[in-house]
Image (cartoon, rainbow, N blue to C red; front, side, top):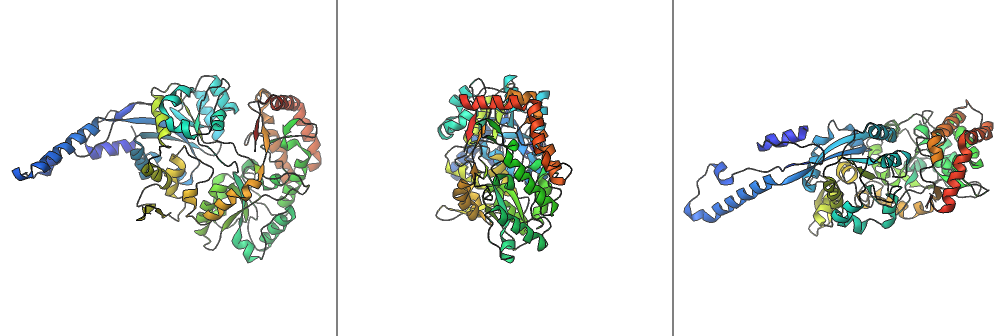
Length: 542
């Protein structure tokens, strides 16, 4: 039994029996006998009040007999406030969300770092919640789980219990959520703009040093040199395995998580294209000259963010929607500092550049095939798109009085706490699982740098999208996982690229690396990926 449930029941004096999984429990209620509990007598002249008390008592008793679905849910802990919370299940914002949504959540957190590996272990052991966050259905881990019957197909459940989802989620999103058998296996958010990541740069440092926003690769280099000379500890910072580090891969159109066509029309990982050698030479130059944090290959997200919040970073890669939040964290330590979004450097060879186009959905959820009442989960997700204005205001802005007040004309006066980690993120970002998730306009608007981030997203970001081909669940990759193109899984490439950057492997061995990749099964990978592209199985991201 959860601690918060014990707290609830003790407060109400109810003895409730909790059922496991997707079962239900009696709802919480208020006082059970209004007039009697007050200890006051009612005169004959107050009969209407007595009737009212009786009605309220009857309603309270009726409410106590209603059932509240208990939803056992595993969620990705990609939120700093959630990660820092001693027990997310007893957090006041979670409790408010449960009351508003009419559910009782039993939340299991899956850590953001190494999420896919942790998820894979849970699925392999067969011990996972009734509904769980996951990767896309066509990724190796999820496709295997679908094939092994671990998840429920949702077509019929959606048709019967999810009118809002079926009406509002675009058809191309549902297509993304289908398994190999054509059935829908996941419920997710949706994107109307596939721009996702960007470079952020310290505007205050640019102004202090009388520098323009960089455009070309040379501009970027000169800015980083100026930052270092001005005493910035980490002019550029990255994360482990080159994650959130792709500014200069993007400049050459070879973001390592993408597939492109080579000069022969074959579909190949971008990291074996000749332009990758040029990109790696640039990263090595930054490393050798102290322009990139030397720990960029090992920084996890938390460490990277701590360094940025301390004011020690001049440039990094973030999700566009997260940029205003980084301003809040930064201003706690450097009040006059400000992050702004900028596009990736122009390709010095005149070719394409940009950050990889994002999938039309990403935050997806699967229902355990052993779940006893999956319809309650489907209804829970569907309610997040209920047009009721009061509910949507709550899901968008959180608790009234804590995060916002209503003006006389009905508009919202948003009052975001300027603290990090920020409790505001719990409801609209962590718990609200289904929405148009491209960028959170309602909340970002009132944040430092928010309007600028939205303007960037709607304008320049659309011109900084790298289109690419995405093969689906290649069997040749399953047989040779070290050849993967997925983030966190590019074993052979990351091993080589990391050694090049720190100087323990020669850049001149790039062709040797490509040759080894081919000999380990890369020829089969390219053949299969190209066949998928030619027959229409592979997806085009743009």
